[in-house]
Image (cartoon, rainbow, N blue to C red; front, top):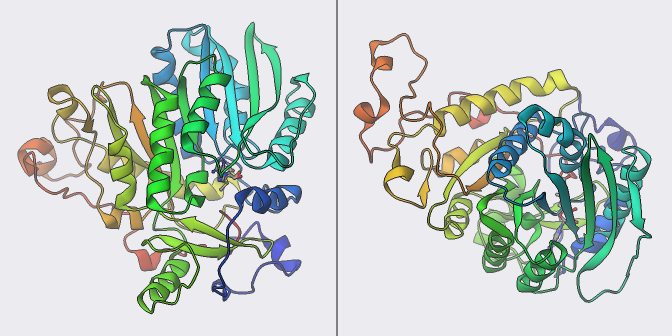
Length: 425
Ligand SMILES: C[S@@+](CC[C@H](N)C(=O)[O-])C[C@H]1O[C@@H](n2cnc3c(N)ncnc32)[C@H](O)[C@@H]1O
């Protein structure tokens, strides 16, 4: 498989092999605004893969949006994209939104709140939206370089098939309290929570400390309607395994000095521009965070988005990874018992164990205002020729039995060629 990052290698910005480069552990603060302003001012980060939006991302967003649209009561369908960057996933959805409405019989205008700490990313997105997607700027972009509080940087709009599309760019300040983030988002949305919150390759992974990540989850939970949808896609422990090993070792040897990496899953990596950056890869803590923001009458579950492996060089190259993801989700997200009907605020599908997280590169944490189960859940059977496949799961495993269906592909972690080239997150 050819890596699309050959240019970086040729330019000498990436190492010749896959080994992580040595990182000194002098104390440092990781200011995401300046790190991402530099990354977005060049093209390496934004064009890191030949496949800009993964099929699994597209599908997860479409499904969440349809569930949220069905329960949207206002004239406007509203989305918050936390850590929007240049709108990699969301902009494609916006482009297809009016057709989706026509196909499914909805008639709702769309407002997207694009929330990010990087003004360069937002400006780049603004330029593309105007030049390539033919949006009209509502007013001139206002860029505050020393803002102490998040503010609306600008907005664009257009009409497609009679549906109004509006994108509001919000330049955030990462130093601010998460309470302020909630207030800002609500005020931008006319003091109402949004119908759908998304976060792709989520900026939450750059938030240091479990407590602060928890308070971001809580804030995002509050900015989203209780009957709406929340989808946060983060890196899981199948990503950056060499960095994890190194930082686990350093933690054991107490060699982390001033680095903010006290928890398992905390790593420091080098970007494609050789910047040191902090990243957290999630495991069981993701399920706990998600459960913590799930209220009565809501359900929650996890979905694999990407398996480990090199960046994709073409759409065809991505397909096997997508198929593995589908198979994995189908097996794990079947339910043995229709619990959400019996008890509100319950996990849909099976409980993920640490090894499930270790077999995924990216995982989406989903909270849904809908308790409807998928028709296949309860009677799901493993595809097998054995007579056992005719017996419903509930009879085979009981209500509380540990999941017996372990993902078959990839068969073992060692079989996966891991992408440890710096600069992808
Ligand atoms: C890994 S990038 C993902 C960007 C984009 N969603 C994508 O999928 O390509 C993380 C993004 O989160 C943003 N970010 C980091 N910390 C943030 C924070 N505290 N608040 C808002 N955005 C943040 C970064 O500027 C960056 O654009």
